[in-house]
Each structure stands twice: as structure tokens, then as C-alpha cells.
Image (cartoon, rainbow, N blue to C red):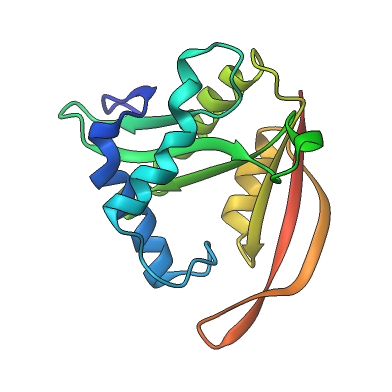
Length: 172
């Protein structure tokens, strides 16, 4: 890949682009089980979970891949796995690319950056929840060391059908 690509921590200045990327998947795919697009205001509230990312031990991170013009090509993040204190060392990861960035190796580089950063935090396990079918996402996660540890059948309902999800785990 010869194009210029920079990976940096996401900032609030990126929120409009992050919202646009995510809403594409909300509106056109079952990759996320959100049913309605997010407003920038709501996405700004979501972004607050990354406020401690300047703390090198904080496990909630968000990174963006940007081109030479600082256009966001995609983002990868880690957040709360489950909202109970005993789960604090477990995080859920996510990655979304602008549709024009798919298949260019950007996702793997971005995810590798996130994982490397997470290895220096208090995170003990990372989990990815992938709606099925999604062979490209499964292959990406497996190539980065995630292993499938579970499957929930017909757990989500979107676009007039039920969807399964796979749970993948990465051990730090």
C-alpha cells in the first residue's frame, strides 16, 4: 500500500466523520444492530468514554486512520464490554471503515494499532461481536489473534430477519 495513511487518537473534531461512517452501517447493513442513525449530539456523548485515553493504562481507546488531507478513512475503538464492575478488565472492540476504504488494508493496520495500544493498558481480554454472515470481519479478527468463543443464534432482528452473532476473544 503506497497511499499516505496516518493513525492517530480520534478527537472530538472527528465526530461528524465518525458519525457519518457509523450511520452508513446502521442504514445499509446488519453489521450493527442499531436501527436508527445516530445524531452528532448522541455520538458526542458516546465519544466521552474515550476521555481518559491520555491515561496510558485506560483501556477505552479510539483511533482513526486519516489520509493526507486528514479525512477519516475509518476508526477502531475499545469500550465497555458489560456494565458491571467485575468486567472492567474486559473490553469490546469495534472497527468501522468508510465504504471507499474497504479492501485496501486500512482496517488491519488500524486494528493492529489499537491492539498494540491495548496491550499496555489494564485490559485483560478483548471481545469482538460480529453479526453473521461476515467472513471478511471474521478473517480480519482471526488474522489478529482473535478466536471464536461463542455464537448466539437469531439474537438480533433487523431488516425483517433474525441475525446470529459470533463472539471472538483476544487474550492479552
